[in-house]
Length: 238
Image (cartoon, rainbow, N blue to C red):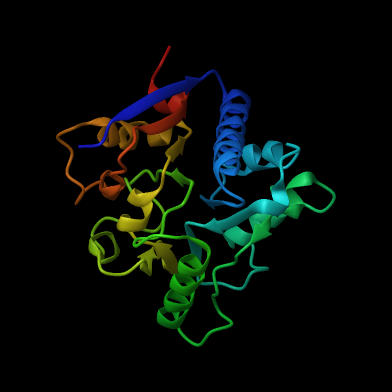
């Protein structure tokens, strides 16, 4: 059973600051032990402010490998592309973060989502050691329906355990996603949760009796405690 450490931020700015500091600390810790660090980041709107702050941190970014935990099967310049958001925030030109090595999820340059998933598995295997591959940090979001990465309830993706990547289908789009074994293998897992609309999903995530069938985020089961960074609206803290 996973152990959760809930940290409540005062507001969105405080949440972004805490998130940026958490990622920076994970990178520092990894680089104290090895020549390179590998981190997997979440897409979506919530982490963008944190990534913009993180980009200003003067870290050895040229020794950091960055991937996305999931990506929509769209072109990299599509407004809904997660990699486009990363390039506008963490990897923005002229920032220290721009020196990180981004390993993009192959999408529409390949004929099918299935081929993209296979290619992404090769990317992850090549940059990470272990079986499943081990990231230093897995930075995740939480959907109102309890999904994380692109492991949506009621779909096949959450139960895939024999591959490192798969196709997640949610909200009308095919998505390429890391699977639960890879999410769980990370040395540190962090959930970032913001907004009143996420309150019920967060309650379910923290509930020991909650079923992963309804809340696939419960499938993330690392050996270390999971850090949950949430604002007051999501956590219902006064």
